[in-house]
Image 1: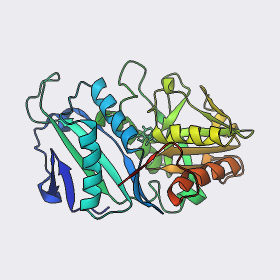
Image 2 (image 1 turned 90 degrees about the vertical axis):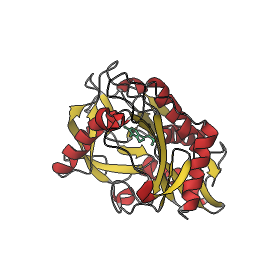
Image 3 (image 1 turned 120 degrees about the horizontal axis):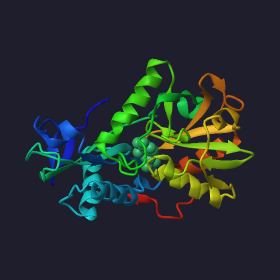
Length: 303
Ligand code: PMP
């Protein structure tokens, strides 16, 4: 990846080289950060940040769970997101707001000041070139997600991503495009950094937030677009074997967008390529950014 020229850091835009953190920062040692991943799309009406406010609201929710006090309000973080994209002269970009415990002690309960930054970079298809069309081969990870009341899966916190790294690295090491984790119950949870949708008889099924997953904004977008298009959506617990039985399967997330899964654990899913419901959801989702899907919920927030 190429790093950007400018970063928003603690209230100002700085050259990339000046946006640094000390090695004694609390977050570096303990994972005490919360963050977001947001995309800006170059739409026919100009660049627009997709569900900027919803993402940044989740940033504050994650911070609240972990008692990380963000010393800026939502409007300031939204403005920082816009400013850093404009300053880098990007039209289409990925945004990464992050708030973390900085310098001020090493006690686990230390009340250190919170540092806040917004980085941005240009990102294509997260899981690789051509995957949105061709799909990926996934595997069920040998690593499970955190059990309830251990690490809160509903917070998008830095430390949680040690789990995601184990899942993603194991999958790549074994030659798969991405890993799917089970919850501590043994039921399906989510991908390393993506939520899951299975299709049975034209109906979308997705795992519930009780399965230790991040309440994804893309997941919510897909559920909303599907219902508006007359496609039923069911949130339900699903056992692993349903991965092998479903007609279609895809992963979704801000980075992964809608990535079809053509096989799991070496077993072909459905016809082994994106099926009609997956293609329809891709059409509706990407239609938001090419002007073919009406933005009836005001999800596109102008740059
Ligand atoms: N689950 C995890 C663990 C993730 O990291 C992400 C990406 N943020 C998602 C699901 C999808 O969430 P969203 O659609 O809000 O990007």
